Length: 125
Image (tube, rainbow, N blue to C red):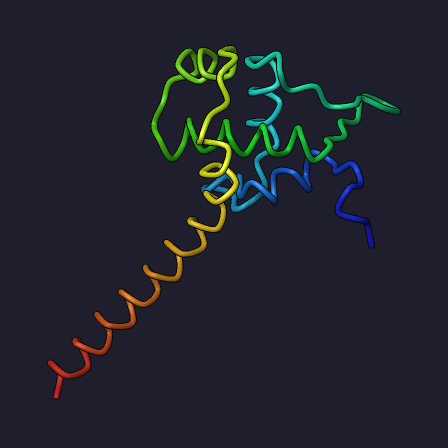
């Protein structure tokens, strides 16, 4: 088992970020490669045969980018301005918690579905 400090492959990072192709149900690594082209701050180590490896700092940066783009609905240019500004952002904490928030949303949706099902069963009787 890898230590938490070990470099992670692009597939492992896609899994950590919860990036999936909804149509295929597969991990979406092309999003990370796209972000790598757009944001100069993303610098994976590229080793044997162009395989990308990401350290924890880069993964945290990707979490922040995902949070700003997907959860906050910002544009790529808006995110670039934030990343290029020298000010430290309270978003660091928010971005790191956004993955936990996604899991909470999923649980709440499941609970909501269960409640609807229970109401439907009561209406049938």
